[in-house]
Amino acid sequence: MDTEKTNNRKVKDKPQAKPKVKTKQEPKPKVKAASDKKPAAAPKAKEKNVSTNRLMLLVTIVNRRKAEYYADLIQDMGANLSFVAMGEGTANAKMLDMLGLTDSLKAAVFSVIKESCQNKILRTLDDKFVSIKDGKGIAFTVPFSSVIGASVFNFLSDNRMTFK
Figure: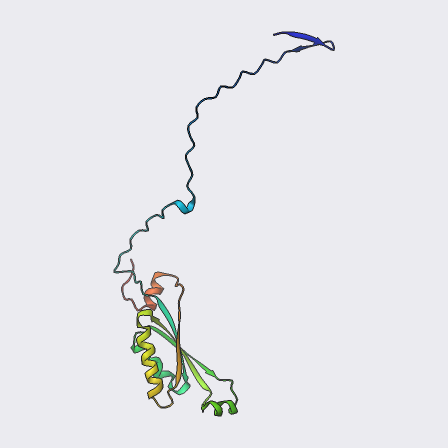
């Protein structure tokens, strides 16, 4: 290497860089987006242990004196869980007279039913509301969005099969 004097110092020439030679590179594998991936197949559950029937909360509001009758009727039609909450209406006497109501003491019957039984139960309740003396009421359902645990679901859906 050549050296030259600069300010009384010896400086070595830097070796020249070798020119880069382009080589053929292998193409990088394409990365698929998460949405491009096919979902992994879920393990198939045993059909005899899994119920696909959705659950509904049936709310029935009736006169307090008829609450036990309606709770028994709903239980006979397939509800596995029912409970009754006693309540009192807030309408004043003038409003009750105008609506043709005589009693403000009410009961709400909350029952868990299968979606497949919903229409049958609501039709039966509608018939009873019309045909029974002082048996007027209102009934509606609300779907469950989820239930925690298979054993809880089996209990609420009246499924007697157990998981092991």
